[in-house]
Length: 114
Length: 113
Image (cartoon, rainbow over all chains, first blue to last red; front, side):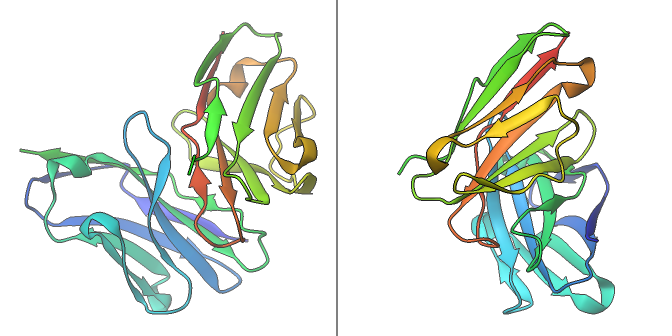
């Protein structure tokens, strides 16, 4: 079985500060890992994905995530937050035997203060 | 290229009524998924179509939910009769190949009163 845990339902940072959103997963098969973002009144948009190539994955809008198998983690980071980064972020896992269905974490609402 | 389209964007219905949600995937995407997010909870998988066939419907809550995908194009999700606990946001996603990027629609917010 697969599962995802996102630590912190709400994270608040100041503009220009480091963004760190935590995601831990469990999977009985080699995982595919994803980060999605949902801006207000929009659908989910893919930020980045890990599919067993490089462990450090770079995504859109300056975000990146590092796959750490030993820690079963896939934390999302951005060196400097912008006001436009305020949104809800979802970590998700899938696997080769899962037909592509995604198992999501609970989501983390990111607020950016001026 | 048009993205995944869902409608209606919002629906408010009374308990016991029927509602049908529609999803138009990206043209050519064989895989279509339905998900639901109940308020305060995580987004949960409902079912997966490959073309017109149900590949996995393990997430469907009960037999009040019926999903179809006519001719392997658009899909509908009918809730009959609706209950209060069915309220939430229903998302549709499509992919060309599995485990590649899933493109999501904006979701349908269903409120059952």
